[in-house]
Structures are given as C-alpha cells and as structure tokens.
Length: 482
Image (cartoon, rainbow, N blue to C red):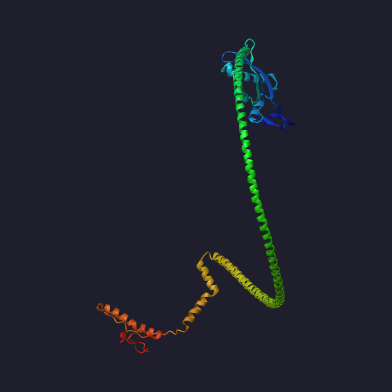
C-alpha cells in the first residue's frame, strides 16, 4: 500500500529490503515491511527544578522548554525515530527523560555557584543550562527551540528570597527615613538662608534706590543745562544755515540766468548746425540717387551682356559635352566589343586547353593503366618462373625481338669497315741456345711492331715517326723496319 505523511510528519519504514530504517515523506509499504508515522512538531515542557547553591541554600527554578526533533539533520532524525518515535511526545516517559536531563544539568551547574551569582547572573545561568542540556539532548536527536526561565522561588522552609526581599524593603524604608530627615534639614536651613538673603537684598535695594534717585536729580539738572545750550547752539546754527541758504540761492539764480543765456545761444547754434546737416544730407541723398541711377543703368547693361555670354558659353559647353559624351560612348562600346572578343578568344583558348588537358589526362590514365597491366603481367611471369629474374629477362628479350635487333645493330656497325687481314711471318722457328734466350725475347717484341704499325696505317692513314723507321710496300706480305 502507498502511504503519504502530512507536512509535519515522517514515515519510518523497516522490514524486508531495508537494512536499518528508512525515513520518507511518502512511499510504498511492501509485504514484510512495517511502518509508523511520527509528528515532528515541538512540544512545551513545564518543570520546576529544585536545586541547591554552593552555600547549601535550596531554591526552585521554574522553566518552560520547547523541545522537538531536529528536522534539519537526517542523522538526528534517525536517532529520534529509533529512540523516541514509538512513545507519545506528551507521555510520561518522554517528559521524565527530558526532565531528568534538565534537572541533572541544572543541579550540577547550581552547585558550583553561590546564590548571589545565580540570582544576579540569571542570563548567564540560563545560557549555561541550555548549552549543557542541548549537548545531552543531541544523543536523542532533540533540539531546544525555545526556553524560558521564570523568577527563582523559595523552597518551603527556606525563605531566602523572602528574607532577601524583606531586607531590601527595610533598607528602602530606612533610606527613605534618612532621605526625609535630610530633606527636612535642607528645608529649614534653606528657609533661614532665604529670610537672611531677603533682608540683605531689601537693604541693598533701598540704598541703591536712594543713590539712583540722587543720581537721577543730578542727571535731570545736567540734562536741562545741556538742553538749553543745545537750543542756543541750534538757533545759531539755524541762523547760519539761513544766511548760507540765501547766499546759495543768489549764486544759483546767477548760475541759472547764465545757463539760460547759454542755452539760448546753444539752441540758435544747434538750429543752424542742424540746418546745415540737413542740407548736407539732402545733397548726399541727391548724389546717391544719381549714383544709383547710373549704377542701375550700367548694371542692367552688364547683366544683359553677362546673360548673353553665359548662354553662349553654356551652348558651347553643351556642344562639347555632347561631343565628349559621344566619343566616350563610342570608346565604351569599342571597349565592350574588344572585351567581348577577348572573352570569346579566352573562352576558345580555354576550351582548347581544356580539350588538350583532357586528352593528356586520358593519355596519362591509359599509360597508367597499361603500366599497371604490364606490372601485373610481369609479377605473374616472375611467379611462373619461380622468381628467377634472369629467366624472365631472357624471355622478355626473346619475346620482344631484342636479340635480333642487337645482331642487326652489330652487323650494321661492321658493314662499312671492310677489314683487311694481313699475315706476317718472321722466319722459321730458329732454335737457339741458352746464351741467346734474352735477346730472343727482345727480337720477338720487335717483330710485333711492323704488323701493328701496318694495321694502324691501313685503318687511319697515320705513319710512325721517321726516327722509328719506315714501312715497306703495302702489298708485300713481309716487311721490316729499316
């Protein structure tokens, strides 16, 4: 059958074909195999761990641990599946297992610390407990997802934290009384200091007021005298300013009169100057008008002449361009014709060359085929004569008529020689004694010379040197060197 686990579950399969166990989210359960499904959701465990500090003071440590399988590590899941998965996570067995580990590690750690260290270092104590408990839970494939340690609680009969709280309360109450007395003392002393400062400040203010009043009276009198002096000075200044203003007015009146006269003169001169300028402008405009008129006349004539010459030049240019275009067109056509002729000749030569090449190629292929056939024939013939190269060579020479050709060539070579055979005799066979043996050998050598010279003379026409002797009649059968 086919089983599928939910997102927070795993299948644990064992049996036939599986060496140990197999974890899967889904799979077939074959005959001879068994399976269970375990939930991987973490569970909260609440404990009250009783421990004792190094001073032999017992206390209770309430804690809440969130513990579950380590889902990101397959070996840990295998451990959990083997050791814990058969039991319910909320069962007494699992809870006692976890509680035993937590209590053991907590008691060992608390025994090495004082109560003050445990109370003040709650965070460090919590981290130490978590670390040691996690090391023990690793062997079961469990992981602490979250842990929360509550406030330490007294064990019945040992009210350490109660006494500590009462001590803190009494210290706070006594400190409050001290603070109240200190505040009351500061208040009374401050009140007296405030009263003395008030009287001192009042006397000081009265004295300063009298001094200020006297100073204000003197300042009033001085201000009055100063005002009177300033009024007199102001009146004198005003009189001087009036006199100065009258003089300035008279001066300005004279200046204004002079400026009026100068303006009248300047206006008259400006009118005359403007009149002259206008007259000059009129004359200049008349001259410009005449100039422009003459310029227009000359320009119109020049334009007409220019247009005429331009038309003539354009016509000549057009004729020359057309003539050049005709010549160019004719040359282009001649070039195209020459190009076509050259291409035709090139094509014809190429075709001839291709034909010759094809013929040579076929001839070479024929020679190659003939050579291959002759080679095969010679190899067959050599095998037939048992590998005897001399016998094969003689056979080929006989078959090709080479011996007959050699005989003809030798006959032709000696046909025009007309050899002459001369027989030389040098007397009978004279016998001599041993005393004449050496001279006999020399005489025989000497006897060989006449026939040799005779033969050379007959074949080449050359005679021996005169110091060696002369030949006798060429028709005699016997001769000797004189």
